[in-house]
Image: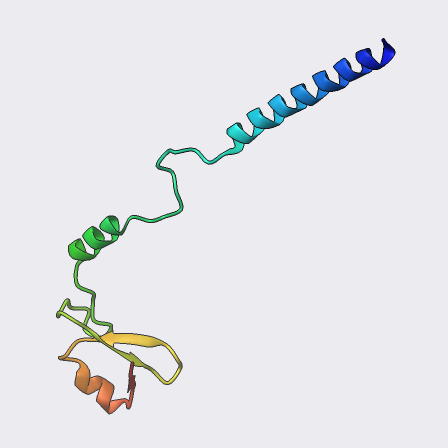
Length: 95
């Protein structure tokens, strides 16, 4: 009789532990919501299309695409086609 009572109590403890661990696993599982670390490329494409042209580092005009050069001190400047001669006079290295 004593062994039967111990067996019933032990079985009860095992069942309670199993139910608790099962419930804990469900609560800790990743949710099916849209929150994610993945960045949508659609936003990136739209932002790139709507971006305006960059300013020239020398004349501060928006003259289309810039050519980037490295100065002697290591800084990078973006120059338009009109200011290309300034870069050649200063012997800047194109990037």
